[in-house]
Image 1 (cartoon, each protein chain N blue to C red):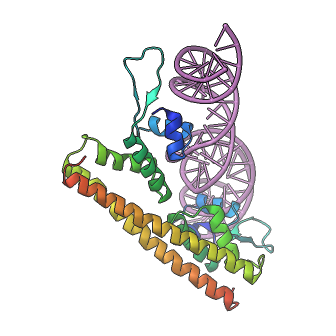
Image 2: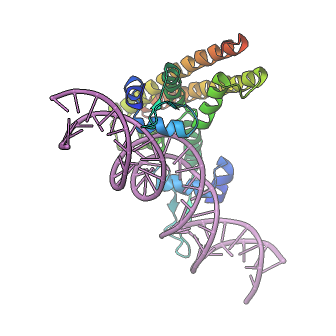
Image 3: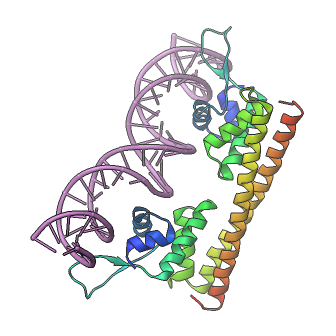
Length: 120
Length: 120
DNA sequence: AGCAACATTAGAGTATAGTGTATGGTTGAC
DNA sequence: GTCAACCATACACTATACTCTAATGTTGCT
């Protein structure tokens, strides 16, 4: 599929998709046989990747971190051990985020009590 | 206390503290009696606020959102009802973040399985 | 052939959250 | 009084993650 279709499927603008491509997160390929244009073609895996990117972004991972995870998943660039290490690392950071959110929740609940009891 | 002490207590640079002050998150006061300088003085509440700011930032709240929460806590700018509404709103967004993190955790665990079983 | 809708690259601009650098005044210990 | 350590303001610069604009080429429908 071309970028417009990919855009519609993922809800990301072609601009943003190209930005992710330039950032090394995804990769379309040009058809060597067709010489009249230089259109990029994307497959279903790219749709999956972009969905993952959106999710990962919303939990606060940076593009760099997301790139690492995608590489750990799709690329042959790392050994099995390296891949697992990267992914475990991200799992740890998720646990950390979780802990921080629970703390923040407590803090805000305290604020609410203070408001209710006119302590502020 | 002056900014340097505040900086040491909170681990934030004077620069960053001034940035937060300019952003309306905290407020020092100048001593009217002393005319020879224009030094700002900060109290313990400001220490608390800065600690809250650091925590809130690490869970992904923006300065704007943090400002709203601080206002909901310390300022007379809102009614009780408005304050509770703001805080409830932030609680909901924390629940949302938590859900997303749990999803992401599942996703990464799936990646790990794929790696272990050579499915990628 | 004409034209809308699509594609590409390249470079500039925006928002957020700082950080750096310069300039100049103040305080306090010696 | 001088000097280091501190304070303030202001403007520039950085990094991240887009978003916009412009220029230009391609495709497909009529």
